[in-house]
Length: 355
Ligand SMILES: Nc1ncnc2c1ncn2[C@@H]1O[C@H](COP(=O)(O)OP(=O)(O)O)[C@@H](O)[C@H]1O
Ligand SMILES: [Mg+2]
Image (cartoon, rainbow, N blue to C red; front, side):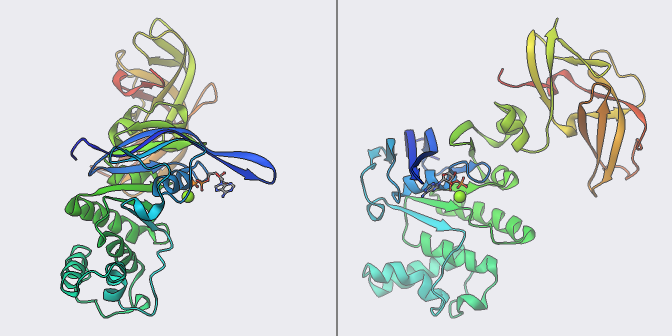
């Protein structure tokens, strides 16, 4: 990454008129994506991801706000003059053309010399690992290979940025995971800015340098994967990314009295909402160290999930806490349904939302 801006959105709003009513698809989004960055827009269906991307690409004009590419205001510049390419979930390859011709298509249209086309298509097929399959038709390829052809077709034009809107949505889980690693490798190799849209949190965490978590037309948090996971800015982000336990109440003297125990929230007072991730919690029968957060509860569910056990524990006041325990040493569960247990975690693993 160079630190220079590739894509900037300044308080961008998009309204549609739908059956006589104004729908705000995007309600004021401000973003600054660096050149060479792998940036993701993550959020549930309908939160405005595609609309945001279409404004970056120029397929939609914002109702309000500015779109800048590489420092230049392009708000009123048409898509074909934006030096940006987009890859969609339905990758629409030309079915009657070979892999080679699909990838070469854009260059031929622009009357690029044959010798240059040969070199660039060859290079690109090597990058997406399709060398040797040049003569095949799209239907003779797997879903993942077809998606790589679509990627090569977009990248061969050497856009300064590539927008990918849920490009792996049609693939099954295993293939999707393999393609996530491939995409990241390809992005590193070509070094251009990728803006990736997904509703899949694992996908965003795996690939991104930074993630904008969107909800209802707004960005709720913009940060790196670790920051988003460890320090969620809002209850929505905490719930959307991974599994999280939310505990709320009035804190006094840096403690939240809850579930027959205490949650340590140093320096906090008044109403707080605390999140703690399931893998940070220890489950046991012995009374925990007083320096830890600790609550009492009853195990209501135990699930064996291969690499870990998942416990649901009900606290006396009705709250339910999820605990993950790794099966690193043996696969024996430490507690069973109906057991009365202590849950404990270190104070630093409680994160007070919005602090
Ligand atoms: N052309 C349109 N006309 C009316 N409403 C639209 C249009 N496009 C999108 N919307 C609405 O805007 C909201 C955001 O849509 P979209 O950007 O496609 O979300 P996402 O890609 O995150 O699923 C949705 O409520 C959707 O119904
Ligand atoms: Mg969409």
